Length: 206
Ligand code: C5P
Image 1 (cartoon, rainbow, N blue to C red):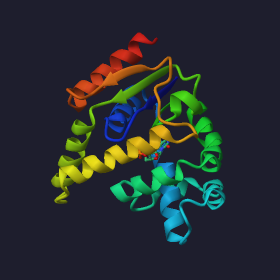
Image 2 (cartoon, helix red, strand yellow):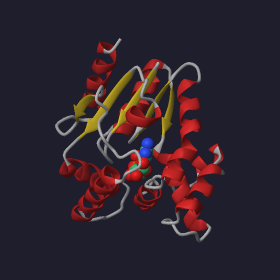
Image 3 (cartoon, protein in one colour):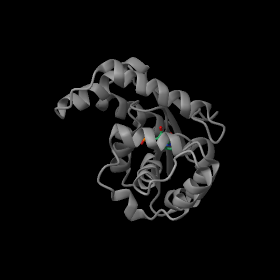
């Protein structure tokens, strides 16, 4: 079984994907980490993120151990990721790894932006997870505050809107709902309710 979870930043994809993978005993790949790692490696090597050829080169050399880089989960890496993710060379270099991961036994949950549309169009279940930008920004701000980081809500909201804009309007595999994906709006749901709703979608699809 392959489950594709796509959607914008902070809509709840990651949590849903992890919980579904655990529930069904499937592998899980957070595909955002691939783009985050490329952005980080390029900055460390002093490369220009807008240079498509160099970005493609770094993407082709990416190894699974690069995904354990210490600082991939933060806001800065997210911003770098969304800049390198616009290059078709980068996206092409990551296709085989993601497809091989999806097809390996016992099956997998992949979350990202283009899983249902480009990476696994044949996925058994596709869920497009979304939520209002304001709620997504509120969740991110609360997460950061809980870690003792005092970042203003307005700044997080602006970053989220900017990332949505770039991810949705790039020409290479833009963020969009696949025709056969089920839309799950988590605006009014907590993490557990969102997982239960996702579970119901998967069960109905089988
Ligand atoms: O999901 P996450 O916030 O980790 O993704 C970081 C960025 O990587 C996204 O904003 C997007 O630009 C890019 N990405 C992508 N395709 C994916 C996953 C992530 O373009 N499948």
